[in-house]
Figure 1 (cartoon, rainbow, N blue to C red):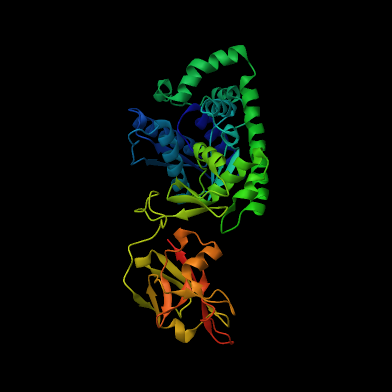
Figure 2 (cartoon, one colour; figure 1 turned 180 degrees about the vertical axis):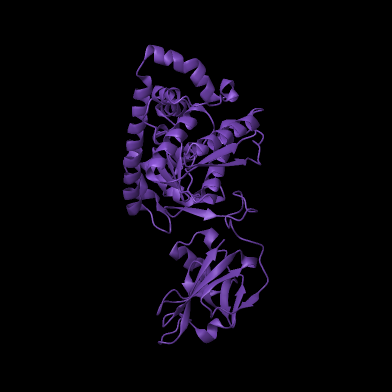
Length: 433
C-alpha cells in the first residue's frame, strides 16, 4: 500500500498488516520521496524504521521506496505534479514487487474536500464524483478501503494503537488550495454545518452514479450516430440537448489518447458543429475536421499544423518509386507518411503478378479511375467528390501498374485491375500516419 508516514497512511498500513497476518499474505509499504520538503529524508528514515520494527514484531510488512527524479516544470501546479508523479512511481514499484492491488488511505473528509475543490474549479459531474472507492488502471487496482469512514475514526484508531507518525510541514503552506480549504474554510463549515463531511461525501457518491448513467447513455447514442469512419453531425444534433455534450465527450475520449477533452473544446464544438459547414479544430496530436456532415479525427505528423492549406496532411511530393505488395502485412512508406496494409485473398483483389511490380507516384491530370464493373472511368477529382473523400485523405500515393492507376487512397482498387477469376490475389488499404 502507499505509505507516506502520516497518520492516515500509518493507521491503514497497521490495520492492513494485522489483517494480512491473519490471512497469511504479505504487505509491501510503498513510499515516494518527492524531494519537496527539507524533512523528506527524515520521513523516509521514519517509514523504513517503523516497517522494520513491525516486521520484528511479526507483522508481514516489507518496505520499498523511490525518489522522484523529476521536478515541477515552470508554471506547473505543484499539487498536480506531485499527484501525477506519485501515482506513476507507486505503479512502477507495485509492479516491481509483484503487487496488483495498491491501498490508499483517503477517508471521508478527503472525499468531501475533493468534492468542494472540484466544485470551486467549476468541474463537471465526472469531476464532482471525486475519488472512486476502487478503480483498475494500467494493470493496478487502486482501492480506498476507508473512503466511507469519517476522519475521526481514523484518528481514534491511531491513538488507540499509539501509532507514531510524521506531520507533513507542507500542510501549513497556504499557497496550496487544499491546505487553504482545511485551514480557513473547513473549520467554519463544520461549525455551521456539523454534518458537512457526510453530506458532501454523499453528494460525491450521487455524482458518481449520475456519471455512470451519463456514460451509459453516451454509449447508446454513439452506437447510433458514430462509426469507424466518423461522427454523424446531423444525427448528433437531433439528440436532446442534455445528451449532446456527453456523447461528444465520449467520442473524443476514444480518439484523443483516452483522455477527457477540455470543457472549452466541448463547449466550442457544441456551439459550432454544423453538418453543412466544413471546419477544423486543433486537438493534441491532430485535428478534428467536419466534412459532408461528418466529424472526423485526423492524426497529424508533429511538423504539420492546423493552418495548412485545404490539402492539409499533404507532403512534399516524393519521387516515383517501385514497390512489391505481394506479401501480407504492413508495408511502411516513410516518404508518403503512411503504410499499405496487404491481405491475401482468394478472389476479388489485385493479381499477384501485378502486385509484384507496382509504382508509387503523385496524381496526374489525365488519371482516370473506374469505381465499379460497368461504370465509366472518371477523373480522380470527380470520383473523390462522388465518394465524399475529404481533401486530407487524398494525399496518399497513386499506385499504378505500367503507368495506369490500379489503387487510389480513399477510393480503393480500380475495377479494371481487380481479378475476375478465382486465383491468389491481394487486397490493399492505405493508412496515413
